[in-house]
Image 1 (cartoon, helix red, strand yellow):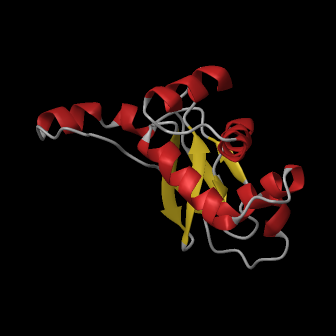
Image 2: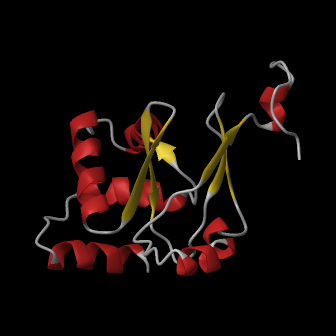
Length: 146
């Protein structure tokens, strides 16, 4: 789905499409991985100095409600990503916040167990938290290096 289709969808859902809402949508769609509000604000502010944190928060809430963004919570923060065509999960560096998309969904390996337990999954999140290569040199070893 492209940005014009997303904007038309927002309009059809009864949301006003403003320049700043469009900007927030463009910023989260430009990065395939999670970003926190500060990251999004910095990028938006670089293109529009009048944008504020409340506008960012309201827009992100609206995009999540409209199904155009996904929110997850870790490291004491909410993180957002645009809902793209490919479903994916992440490795997340707890030091610098860098994210790397996983090539597979772990839920694929659990389908038989879920079926046997008669468990119906409505949504799921899977993030591996650790330290990226760049940050490892500053940290004592303690995790599993695969």
